[in-house]
Image 1 (cartoon, rainbow, N blue to C red):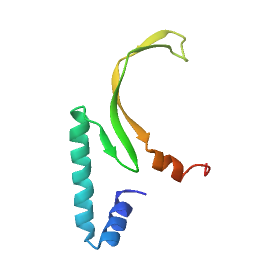
Image 2: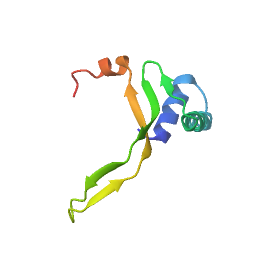
Image 3: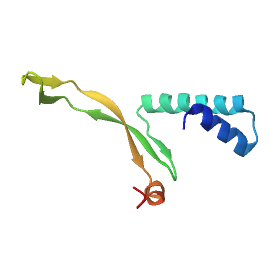
Image 4: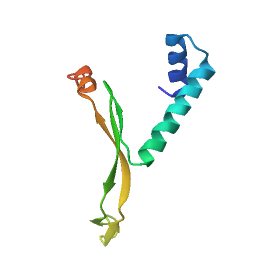
Amino acid sequence: MNKKYLAEDIAKRISIKKYEAYNFIDLFIEVALDNLGKGRKLVLSKFGTLIIKKKNKKRVINPINREPMIIPPAKIVKFIPSENLKKRFEGNG
């Protein structure tokens, strides 16, 4: 599912215009990114949690030339599914 289909589905389910659903999705993403950028976690009950996690630098071996190299530290977005989400798809994999 992409943004277009998500907006159409939301618009249909709550009887709003498609452009209003698009605007809602854009606003939701903007607010979520702003808050994640401030170090806050985003908890969506019955779905999951998004958090920013710091990864330390890591020493690895380049598989092509076998030389050691360092992967610099980084921040990543981690998704932790809720128990509800896990149960919903349990045994369907």
